[in-house]
Image 1: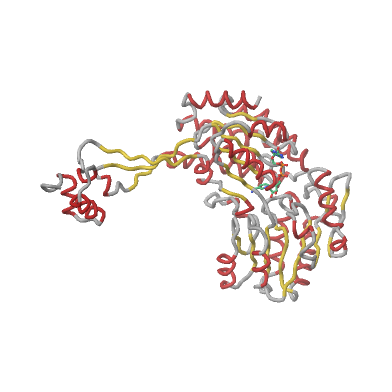
Image 2: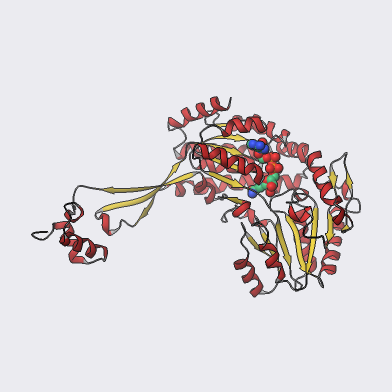
Length: 477
Ligand code: NAD
């Protein structure tokens, strides 16, 4: 199946069908129509998979897909236009340009937590860049996977864009094929498998991975505003099951009580006294993840650190927003990516101590800082390596299509969104064209000291040497 699908798409791609702007625009309009006309079906599937609140489904998935389509449609011609560059003195006379070339048939493997967005958004980039695509949605979000398999062929050219459903065996079979690019979203353990299988065919990859996103909160901030922005970026994003969700907070000993109090107030306002019954909180995706999160909470050195929340309901797969204060740094909750509604708060004497702690961990996908101190902002921006740095807010950077979205180090490689999506799925081809005048004899053997002198003169921009190089070397050269 995997081999047959890849072969069929290779044939379609080789006809040149996907290259013209008109084909790309038609597909992008198809995806836009799908996201618009099928909003209810998409929200229903996301609810079936994750009990995702309709507002989050629309704002964080459907509307993002629509924005990406519109952005690509608006910029496509500009992106496709070869970019003229300086011809350079050594190749005079010539013209030089950079052309974006499609990579061929590409594979997109997506994750369960934003199963619509993470599937369709990379596909938009692949289409815009003129590729044929196989999309492999996550089997952990089966309703959205089935919906995409049903919908996409109805809205786009099925001879060039296909959905292949399945789990590990099916994904492994796909990874064994030769692709123009593999775009993978998910955890780093599988990222390593993807990278090693891609190596067999020297296939380039984008890995959109995760990690522990830190939030540093300085004591000079408005605690209530900071608490609201942290809470919406954590529990308002799929109940913490988001790659950019705040994973832990670092604040000062003296400010921690005020911050905890503000977070509690905000959480009560957002989700009420019985958050397990709130329709505005997603469920945990499955019992494996529910048990994993329960283990993190129940670890002996952590279980007495819960200062707010901690309720769970295994039947409903729900865990309430939970704050934990001063958990030991060697606990599992501080070593693994949490990817759920638990939020540990680490305290330090001075806010600058947070830098050493963050830098002792793997590089995060996003690092957040709340402060009014512009010097601290600069130090954070320059002193912490992360996929993105956000000051005085969380998670919203991914809505800005002018910014690249991707990790660094263990949080991933490569980036997408907006122009970066087009670039992720394009090869930048160098094109240099000459005519038959302007022969530079000094270029050709037999080499002589005089020819070398002319070449050196040309390289220095010496006008006489240039004239000599074109018009012919002086006698004896
Ligand atoms: P997942 O379980 O849905 O797996 C992702 C994909 O990998 C799926 O399509 C799955 O079929 C495939 N897969 C799983 N095991 C495989 C194997 N052994 N061989 C080949 N393919 C395999 O999702 P997940 O990994 O649980 O996703 C959560 C992780 O993804 C978190 O670490 C999160 O931070 C990260 N994430 C990153 C981004 C981002 O944009 N950077 C977005 C969402 C999630």
